[in-house]
Image (tube, rainbow, N blue to C red; front, side, top):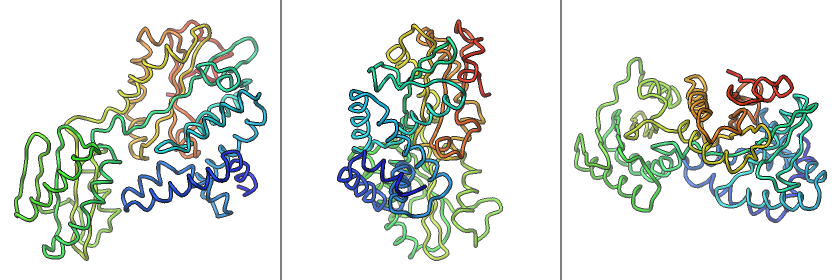
Amino acid sequence: MATKEALSFVNLAGIAAWGKRVSAVRARLNDGPQCGKFAAQRFAAECAVEKARRGLPLSTPEAALVELATRIPPLYDSLNPVGQSRLRGALDRAMQDDATIMPLLHMVHTAKLQHDRGFHVEFTGLTQGTPYDLLISRDEAQAEIACNALSAEDGHTVPLSSWSRLIDRIDPDLQTWLSSHPGRYLLKMTLPNGLRAEAASLPALHSRINAMLSSAKRADYDEAAILRLDPLLLAGAQAGDNTKNMLARLRQEFGPEAQLAVSQAGSSLFVMAARGGTENQVAATMRRRLAAIAPALLSGTRPGIIAMFLEDTGREEWRSLREQLLLEGEARQFLTLPEARPVIAVTCASRYELAQAGTQGGELRFRNPMHPAAKSLTLAPAVVSTV
């Protein structure tokens, strides 16, 4: 991607504002190894644009994200003054605190998909202030599209953001402990109430683990946490396995919902595996969000599409949500509710679709067979189910 095109996006964002944002992201990337990995995933688009601005080589997914970002300045130029003001405001908000530019890229991605399918696309949310973002039309048929973003962290019983903070806090202590207790260990944690990043939650669990290790206890439990320390014994594991292989084997044993971490000192290993007291509720959280926003974002006078962007999900989790039909099941359950009457289809995408490394066709799509326009051949490219 040409540096000139990336600069057009940065100029629209504001050079000073972009520099401040890049500095804030860089600080997060350096905020401990695990927190840095989480930040790199969350702010992947910002990092890709900054690399392009500096003329650095881009991976294929990075180039795809930058290409979406560089569609925003031409969009800005095509809008009326009110639309330009709204787009600037949205971009300003996307560069604050925990927000990212990904939801904006998702809106552009959604518009591109519909344009490529032969629809005329209007950004009415920007130009007219409609509650929905896009109005698509083809021949005499029209449909409204409301774009909405949801963090998978909202459905995680042990959020990766909190887990990363815990691991970065405790890893130096584990390194010290392993130096005087060589071997291979597994600390299994069940957290009935999950793990949140409140001021007292992480330090309290950190202190409990340290106290358990210093007293040579094998187990510690109360209503907040059940901890058990055992020798690390994995079928087929070899002493020379690298961390990546070790995590793959642990994932097979503990399943996709567990949070895992490995601390290593020489040939010694300390593995932590944590699960909440209940299964993750990512898909169910999406269903509840759909029910909440459909009446507010769609007019009900035209067929409506809700385009969900699911952020903060890893590749394995996203694959599991798709292949186990969890998203489909919850989306179809939503489509049976009264709140879904104006909805002709629900679409789902993650950052992998935006980076052209996910679902073929750019999104998952679930049609509502009960909608009066469900069998419209004109709208079919935008609403027919993909699974």
